[in-house]
Image (tube, rainbow, N blue to C red; front, top):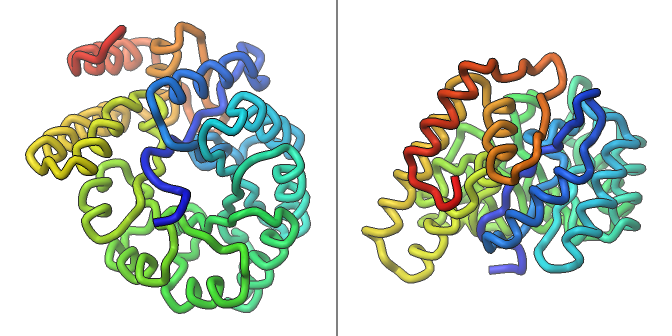
Length: 294
């Protein structure tokens, strides 16, 4: 198992009332998670709304995350974009900012063929010269990275280290593990079954709101306590269901706001904010989980 493993929250990008990036709340969210024992962060990914932020905002997030982390965990910064030039620029900046690794979705809207995807990742990997994670998110990109394409990336892009597998084709995870990749499952609901076939952990948005629930899964699994890890996974899944009710993004922002004592704002349009009555329901259901300090 490589250096990248464990509970890796896909962190939110909090906003001020005017919709700008709330840097203080971002730092507070990171610190809350670090104190909970997480192993790293997936920064400015799907939960971080990267494609709804401009390049300058994404670059600032890279700087803040590296500074706040200060080498304590593994920061994996998302630099994927719909053009190779933009992805290269973001990758080079992230490396300069001091993150430990970068990740990228494939090019979206226009993808070309597999040769084009390989060249895109070759350029991103070279620009960052850091460990590179492939973000396999076919529901948003339209491309499900196949085992054959992943093997080409392993063979032809030397920085390729691992992936976040957010594809409905769970079985491909087994093949990616067999390639020696640090393979994270992209759904926290599947952390336990994924680890049983060799996944190194999970990257997902709900983890950043209640990291202790997924740390319980990780710790019980490492201890070999099957009964405890099954109970922990069921409890984490209850939270996953709670935030899925009224809009995943707004609900997670609401729960994090409650936990860190700072308002994290609303997601950017076209994502809708959680309504006041929905927020009340979500927070009440999370309180029923009996989390400390909630």
